Amino acid sequence: MDVPDHMYFINHPNSDINKIVIDMISPEHLLSYNWWEKHKIHVPDEIELLKICIVSYVLALKMNKVEKMLVENRNEMAKSTIDEAMTLQIKEKKLLNLRKNLAFKLGRRVIVKY
Image 1 (cartoon, rainbow, N blue to C red):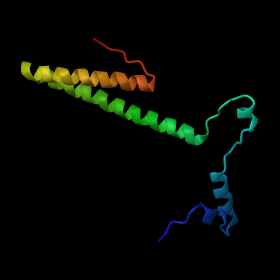
Image 2 (image 1 turned 90 degrees about the horizontal axis):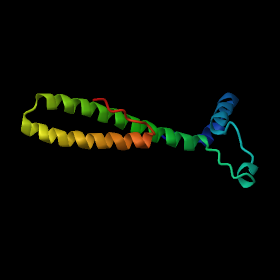
Image 3 (image 1 turned 180 degrees about the vertical axis):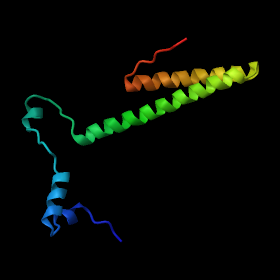
Image 4 (image 1 turned 120 degrees about the vertical axis):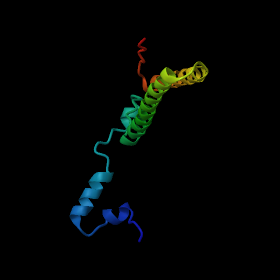
């Protein structure tokens, strides 16, 4: 069974369905053409804002994962031998650099506690 496209619902015989679909796909507000042409003011639309939000959320998820990995690595270091600790310190340094880069992309500050 094929999924109908938006045109099916736009031309639907039931006027309630027709109205709902048109309201969903039509922009709520339209900006004047002069905003860009005369004043060179760019106003992002919902799609642009959605892309920014998605990237931000993915980076935030990565940041949370790195934070958990840092905690796990520190717990392993506490139980490790000297040889294992050296390897875990290298891993710690890489995770800290990754956290720093993610924080920069997210516009966050990282406060280091000693």
